[in-house]
Image 1 (cartoon, rainbow, N blue to C red):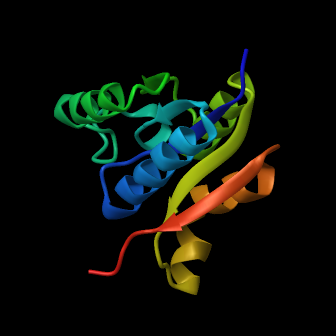
Image 2 (cartoon, one colour):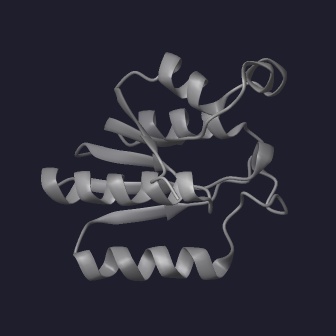
Length: 134
């Protein structure tokens, strides 16, 4: 399997920024792009689980680019970070792209951090992207 770029996508400004940057990186490198969207522990009713319309828009945009790609929405019950890391291993990813949002120290302590887990546990490079300022 050839190497690829994996992006963790959720329908938020941070997720969209990560998707756009991952798409640009895949085009620049000529690699396959794998978009991973999962709800909280694989819950497809979660608001971070992209709608069919979101997925259709991503698919249409990637089709226009000519990139080799796949969009996956795992529902196996794993945490988002675990799914992103699992897909990155399976796809022999050379890069994982994730969106970052500002969080207070208390918020980090109480809620944990998908981004932090991906940054610490990935076996490849990780690119953290912030959403453009409003």
